[in-house]
Length: 100
Image 1 (cartoon, rainbow, N blue to C red):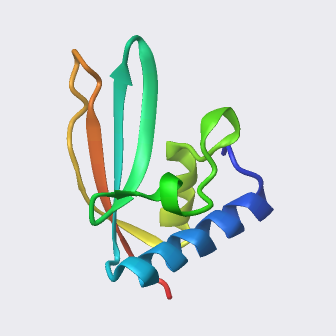
Image 2: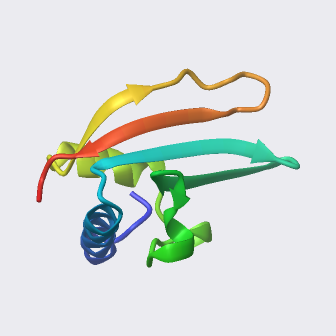
Image 3: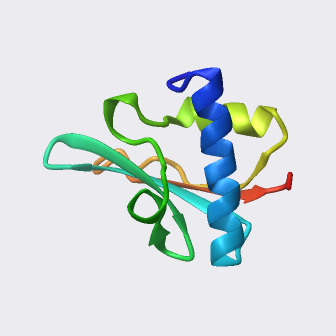
């Protein structure tokens, strides 16, 4: 897990706040490689959450394992997942917040 237990709780609360503000329970995780570097982000209604909310990014930011942990805790439910593209490594996972 990339985030500590406290950071994970704060991350979960910020996702809930973004969901409430933006009026959607669907969160999209998207990853890709740009210029030989991996990148990823979270979106609600096509709005990049890290630009509007306190979402931890960068080396010390959230990772796929943190989203998996939130799913295990019952906060998120995976709705769909695309297979990772072998050339550009694009992948998209759609989650729904199920715990308010």
